[in-house]
Length: 132
Image (cartoon, rainbow, N blue to C red):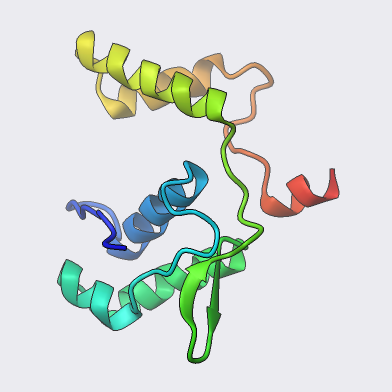
């Protein structure tokens, strides 16, 4: 599968790669077992150093979203958690409403953080999800 990753100035390329791959996995656009491009191939495609892609992949492995096997490449971990369909649908609706109202992504994120019911600004970690 060809990954659609867009890098912008101002943020670490490794962080952008990590965040975008995480988004593709949690929205099931990269399903469990799906092969990712090799570190060298993705680095070449994006015009970054291989170490940058390797750093992003290692971070996603630590988070339980990717697994790498010698000779088998890097794949989406079979147990990678997915975002519930309803959340994805509402996120699309929020994005469309934001575009229609000329509200930027950063402002939409600030709004979500403000209205989040229990005051938490980060989702449960994989460890929290597994422990209940």
